[in-house]
Length: 77
Image 1 (cartoon, rainbow, N blue to C red):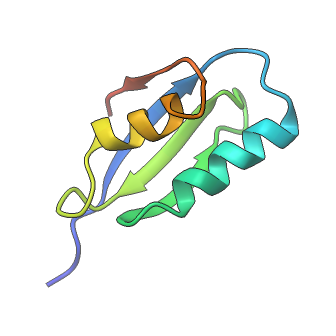
Image 2: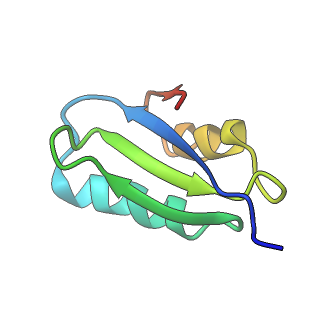
């Protein structure tokens, strides 16, 4: 049976420099259950995150970003 992958968009605060954006992307990609974390090509502050909901929740992904001192919220798909 294939893993169910769910996508969510994390809307990050505006004005992140490229290094900070890369740090957040890496942090999310390293979370157990996260399959991918990729900034939008058009709006870099929008991060598409694919995850296995049996392992991690969207709220846990959001809290991981917020623990790093960033304002963020979820945009459902």
